[in-house]
Image (cartoon, rainbow, N blue to C red):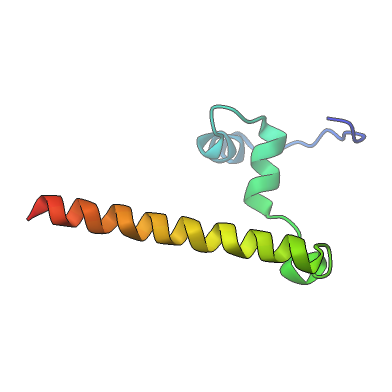
Length: 79
């Protein structure tokens, strides 16, 4: 963690709730960041160039098509 850190006190029950959401490969700090959420979409506006945004759109659409194809294949196999 490259940022300055702070120590906070939490109740035992809250600590248990946080650790219950902790993924195997993440620190408690990363878990809290994920649970609290990241920047809003408004804060992200304008961070990508038009070309970068189009690359992301294309990748997302390809992923959706692949997922739809996989689901269709699973349902066809189930019949």
